Length: 131
Image (cartoon, rainbow, N blue to C red):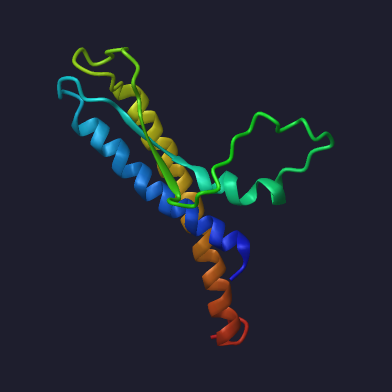
């Protein structure tokens, strides 16, 4: 399987997890002292920093900390800010809804590209798409 398809499949996994986290935040908007959660796709950078990021100076990425443990694709983060946007916790509904829209677009893009790849393979197997 080509590497770009694997990256897109990983992005689809991330979008599914991100959607669950956003839904959890929205569901708990009225829960007192609930701390907003987020998820980071750390393997995207970890696995591809050397192949996609080319630098001309060794110090360009010196501040970058890359976790090589490989324990999980996703890093779950608690937002410890004291900004009580909803009045009872730090969940901001406008921010959650904009992240949900962004995540939906990202998911649609990745799923279309993966679907196109497999449709092309199917057409090749069928003989070039002739019916």
